[in-house]
Image (tube, rainbow, N blue to C red; front, side, top):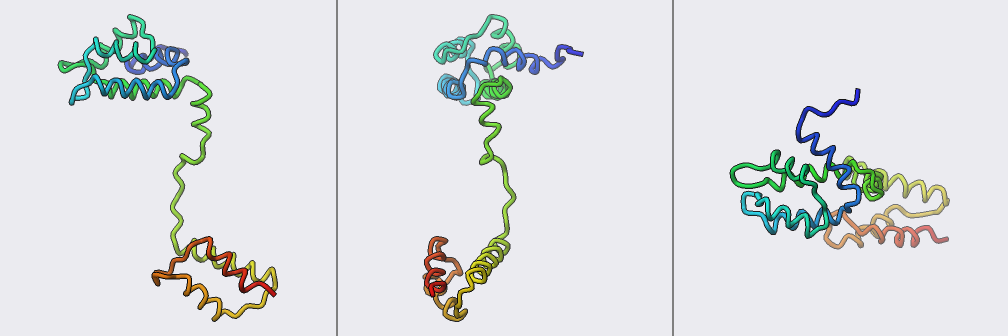
Amino acid sequence: NDQAPADPEEKFRNTMIENLEECSQQRLRALHMTFRRYGNVDNRILEKDLLDAFQENQVTLTPRILQMVTELYRDQHGIDYERLHRCLVTSHNQTGRDSVKARRKRTDLEHRPQVPQEKRDSDFLRRIEELLIRDQAFFDIDTLRTEFQSWDNHRSGNIKSDTVPKTMLLFTET
């Protein structure tokens, strides 16, 4: 069931996967910047400038690939280099290069749900309480409150996170 894709752009993407296996992300970004340098305000580029951009960035194009690019991305104003670049990036993401695999494994790029401030504050207070109970430290809650308020210079209810451990040390020392 390994049929050729019916969509010409999908066919082009599949063709480009093999072509971009030796192309780094940096080279692809440099190619995009070169497209923009040669392009006009309509995000179009002439075929000659497109060839120059690929050559400048050491990305090889076979005559068949060039023909596919012009058939898919050319209109009366030139070749739509932004659409072409998006397609190249999509193809590059399927190459299996180490950098592509590493980028997929990065967790710092994932969207994390925003935790409401009230929940963070209640969690923080719960941890302080557990710390004080665990250490069986005597503390005067009114003095602790006064100390925290003295660190809140703008009376906004916010203090620096590194201030809290210092304040806690003052009240947990025996």
